[in-house]
Image (cartoon, rainbow, N blue to C red; front, side, top):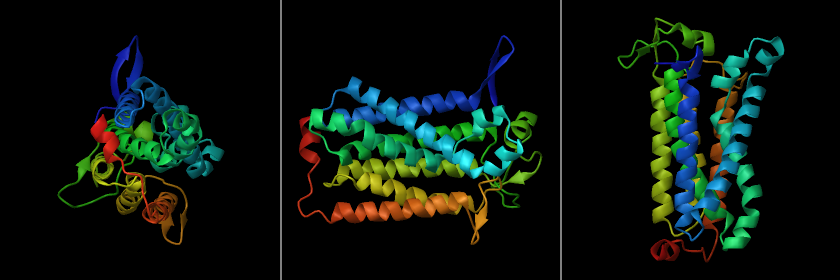
Length: 271
């Protein structure tokens, strides 16, 4: 782990923030690339992608405040903690979904594209950014796992990780950061395959929520950082995951209920 990338004039440059920037750029680039294959101009899609990324960031921050409200009210969340680890990824996905419907209404009319095409491309890009961004969690020590005697355990030793994210030091923990990286990669590959293979638009977006929600729910069982209050044996993050799975199933139900679904393949061949 390496919470601080380097220092400029004594000012630390956090590794998490740097990797998060890379993740945002990768997500936006993938979104614009996929939309260009539908005939939309790359530069315009980059602009829209930034708007969706900002809405996702707002959603992630708001969800973090809700989840950590008791700690915020008690004044135990420092500004450094909020700026480096103050995000809930699934909350960011909800924010990005809301932002995409609002920002892309005009663009859809302008270029003759459907909302499903926008949302599909957005979630493929979002999954890529999610996988890359989790490397920042590994470097910072946030999203850490509980104690384990399994052979795959990992040990954190950097005092800055404990100061920033409360990471337990010098004990063997479940490698939840690596699992989250693998989860993001899996969701990205599944959604990317769907957007290329399925003749129906909207499938990739639905799979993002189903596959992402199920895998995240399982990983949450191994985590030991605070993720909101518990209700009926599930944490806030697990309830969000279950809600995502339900949303994805409902979304896929609507997608497959269409009798004459628009095919994406002619647009891809024409690109």
